[in-house]
Image (cartoon, rainbow, N blue to C red; front, side, top):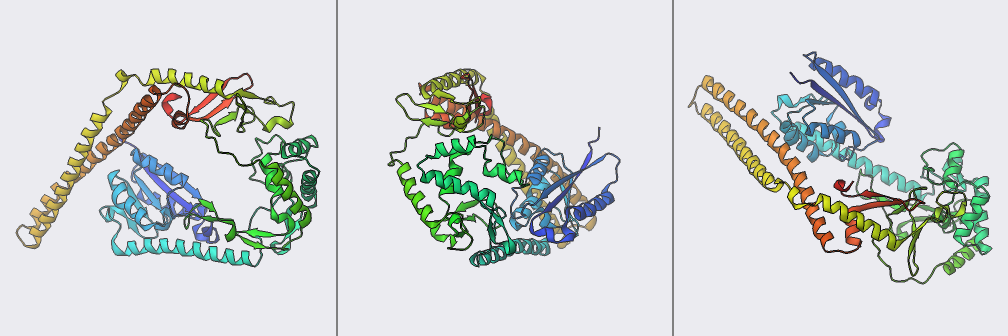
Length: 510
């Protein structure tokens, strides 16, 4: 049975592209569908659409393009169509790698409509200098745009213009992007500061806010029509970290603070926190919710809350024990017999996880017993396959095919030289070239098959190696330790009846 011919339409729209109508998702879709219709010469076809909305083209960390590449790896895509090269990517090296190496390997045709580029016309290369320059221009455009955008943003920051989309709890945006006091929220901020001045601890303040039924900042903003706030785990309870951030934030005394973070790479999304000396600060920038005198008093009181720093104890389940009811991390309470407790629900006596706790030693023993039993089943030496031998054999076979392809290309070049030197006729040249082309296609097809098998065997080999490592570690231990925990356990969910659920890092343990 003949396989279905599958065409993938790839569409990308970044934030800066929104201003250009011709690059809209709707416009790209129309262009690509119209072009795809001209290619179809069979009734058995399928058109798939992949859309990345709001993603930069400087890297391939995009959900739709990753989904597309996964289908390519399993030979489920025959053709990709994009509006222009920059839609697929603005990194010239990566775009060139896919067009020259990946797509030919998996027999995928690549078409860029506006660039009049089709790999079927270029024998799997990127189309020479013209297209290389286009890719470089696309890459430079993205970097240049990012730099100009960043420069303009910092210029506005230094002028004191508020750049963040989200206002600090207690404030709202006014005219000319200036901050104004949000009276309703500011009343809560003042209440929190006053409670600190009255001698209440952070947990006591959280308890008081819950009893007064005062919405958390996220709940407050949702109630006011905001979006994008995850309040699914709050249950109306203020987190201790939220209260701490409020009473230490200089913005409540009118200080403008911006530029606390910076992107790790141009065009990327990952950020890092900058040193405080690099922040942009402007005193008396906007109306103050808290007086400077009260703010300073609160900072002095906060110092009395803090204990003298002790040597940090690294314990095996650090940040891994989660309350199964409210989904918050359980705190380790250092005692003679340490326990994990759920502090989040301490303000709500009716919560199912109120005063939920489990002894650390009991949890360690329970987990180690489970790990030992799982390992006894999975790490049986007799069950280990011959993946390592098979993998090495496939690697050699793959290398052989690559060498044969290289030799075939050399033979084609020698054949062309013979034609130029008039050692053979054009008719003979075409006949032999056709034979070499057929041989190349067969070799490339075999290489693609063996590459896929090798990749699968590589994953199996890696799994097997991990299981061997785990076996060695477990055999040398008698209780749960950090090595075992880091190797195997992602999270441990604890429930009121001392029932636990484990999220394993190693899939075979599930």
